[in-house]
Image (cartoon, rainbow, N blue to C red):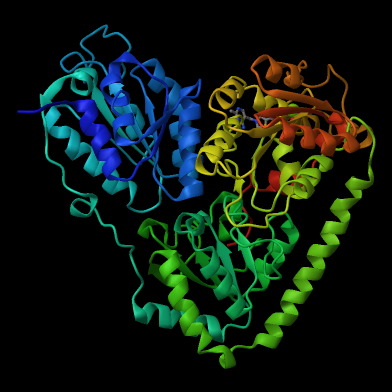
Length: 583
Ligand SMILES: Cc1ncc(C[n+]2csc(CCOP(=O)(O)OP(=O)(O)O)c2C)c(N)n1
Ligand SMILES: [Mg+2]
């Protein structure tokens, strides 16, 4: 009988599921897996930290709609991967993690002193959607089938399969495989005709319906369908932070999340909300007053792929379990026939008012752009990028205040072009997300605006970018401080002095300052292109040189540390930490 290794069985199953890319770091304990990847046409891309492998896989999955696969080796490799498991599961990215564990018989449970061993399944089970161990050759397929099934069920997240080294590397008789359609559902879940009809009737009759879009729209790739339905209803569209960019912000119906008071207003004026693929979590103010109208004054239709999400934070009037793309397409068909039943003139009037308010806020924000002093006002960073890069470039935002500034001066013009950790706020994840983005879309431009603190968490991945020819442009906003936290501290310690002086002295805050890292020089030491700028006018020429360099590039951007602390909208971010007052 033909022989195979456990690792080859795993590789075969991944290939059967259409996996083309895997992210992770090699180790002898799963040689039998990664040595078989090439044969199945799967590329292995290796970062220099396992958490980054998870972030790369998560970004790849979010951008492509495919499964993101990461590997990590037993003990230390998995310990390092845990941060990535927490974040990618929290963000809801469809990731499968395959790990090695020590040989059968000395783990599960630890025999007592087993080298590079901990209960990986026990730990990851508490952090992810599902985790299991393939404890024999005959259980590899079963465990992977189960992991795939769970991965495609409900809200996306991380699933994990642990395989002992003697199973990955050891030989067994060749096995037969069944195709994915024989072990999991491939067709999308679809709303019934009656449900779509009911939703259409409610939406047509409403005075001012609005749409609130969450990351579910991204996972369903339902951008065109969303736009069509919004247009048919003439309904304003707000998004969760994670779903920013699902509707181009150049569209008259888009309510960009950065106009925070306007978001509150829209959410209070609407008498009906169509919530798509969103839990209405903390950064959506839990769907509660005073940020939203009360459930007595505002009905909600909630459409989701995950039944557990219905009415989670805001009572629902019509709950529809459905793939969003299918639901929105069918809803569009129904709404087209109901056009004359809708109070469209009133809705248009309301939208015009919202647009005027957005323009007013924009003018206010744009005042920062008149400030051409050096070191620069951080507003220039995202603004210059937005003018420089193509509309379909992917913008990764990472850092504390840096991410806030980036959001406020960015404009999303093409769906699914922003990467961040909107739920987790994980400093440093962006370094790796940007790399995963290039793997997903090698022909598109990818840039990452990141804080100097955040960049410090994953500096080593610049070498990964150079080694794998991943042409990310990193713009590191250097204020030599944990800016966002320093600002919080200042208000906690000496609020009056902070308001009057704008900043406290060096000894008046607690461990908030950092020394300088010369990020341009550091990048050059790893073979990347380096630039350093301090004046706004220097930024565009630097970006041009980075583009011309044709490789990974890092721009050390000196920003004014005091101005940087006064990022727009900070008061709202503080408010978000408190329970909304309304019922
Ligand atoms: C991994 C991680 N550790 C700690 C924090 C807490 N934290 C939130 S913002 C922040 C400061 C960020 O500094 P930097 O990246 O330089 O951005 P800046 O605010 O200065 O723009 C810290 C420490 C976090 N979000 N993530
Ligand atoms: Mg900083």
